[in-house]
Image: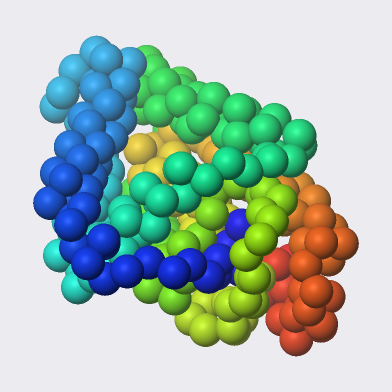
Length: 246
């Protein structure tokens, strides 16, 4: 859920024992992610000689490579997420809907970009805008890394977790905005659509921005109701995703 670090008691020996298996699983997962994204783009485009799609794949691959070599970051995230998967959560009904719609919109960006910029050229985007998209894509991935370095236990769904004491994050990007993960998601989605050169793909990217904006409002309301101290945190950190805007 972003602003909370769920405190756990994890013995160092237990984490170390799981590292080789966790690393292999993560490498395979990350490579598969890049392969799936690239395959969808190239199939929709009907060709592989599409420089923008290769740039996108390189950015994603570089992001995963940084996570892999970052001291303790990838290992800690993997170990914590593995333990998290063994603990049941009561996911909010509205978050289930958001988590269902979100990958559909991502798929829409990839397919629309491939059909438009890669194959039929329904729209034309200037190089300046595609450059802006590439910069936004890189910044978004950098923001992901910044978030995880500050809060390696960031959750992807809003849930009611009993029996564990949450501590409000006030380090890294959480000093400036309450939901930096969502801001990074918007940058990556929008930047990817612009980089690929499709104005039509900006439509599902814009819907992702709307979806994440709605999610921050719903999440804030839930956190204010359920977690002591969060209301005070909203007074300290005024903006949800983008300083001076929202």
